[in-house]
Image (cartoon, rainbow, N blue to C red; front, side, top):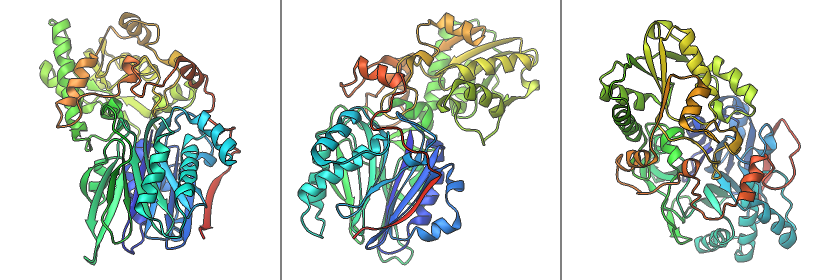
Length: 506
């Protein structure tokens, strides 16, 4: 899972805007960050491992010149983490000079990488499917662009050619050096992408911003125009209005339901659906199931697992008629544990991440509410922490259904054998995490919780819950491959400390 941003204006530098938005999208990626900007003829880039605030210092920001650019924050998906060589945006010098950032995952990246070498002698240097995507786009542009002037129709034709080859879930932003920015979204709308606008400070024109979440647009002072539609591309030049084009026929509109459950910030709205309202609705549905299955429950207090489960836990407590309390204090400087590489690191991280407030547990029957249970590492240790703090009984509720299948569209939870729900029923999962009883949200209730949060799509990508891969191309062989941790394409990259360059695009 990653966060992407693209910005353009008539003449003002965009480095500060992109930096600000990447900070707002930090929850979508804490592994690496990068910015590429462009003026009329040059490309400037800074990419490195770490948080946004650590990757970009004053000397880097001063070198990121130009009135258009793109940015990226990364969690590793399929591929290797720990190398700055895979930090985005990626760039190529020809044609024109292109830089691209990508949120999602291509399910046919390996075969595409091989085809690139065979037909165009393009070598992929990393195991990132984003580099594959960029090189295919560059190849398609070389076929249609025959002058120094880039016509919008030429770019859209190249993107159409790209869509005919790639499969998977993706939201992409890019910059053509000195010409403009572009963005597009997969035909199912799996990964989110929105566009906004604001007046320039001097009132002489408009600035445009494309980002992964609406709250980033609003917080940066932009007015949300709309979501980019499935299979749609947009191209924006300085001093010009955005040009939209449907470059591929939209398939069934199925945004990733895990965005609403966990990844997106609660103050975001994606595809007309409120993330916060979804999580409130999840709490309502969860309480209804508890009351139906355990009408004589003896819950004394409802406590959320910080932070994304808070709205669900609060509404669940209200519907149950039970007090809501904050029982855990979170260390905000530890990343999301289920995406951390290695079980040992995740286990160590839980204790660094949370600490119990004993007064809220002592002698009480406690219902712990989490947004989801993936590997179960966090759940098991949190139940143990609640007991150590003096809880008489510990009940556990997941506001999402059991995660039983890999996500292949951009979330790093690929190994099915690591899921606590793999090969276990609810009773066995309950025993594994050490709870007195466990309850999961029903999938249909989760879908309805999202649907009723606004006006938007009726169906969703729920593959991690039901194993239904909406792109229709995910095979058992592919799932086994990513489960082994094999690189999606290319060889393992050479580890480097950082990428901080200036490229002359002409």
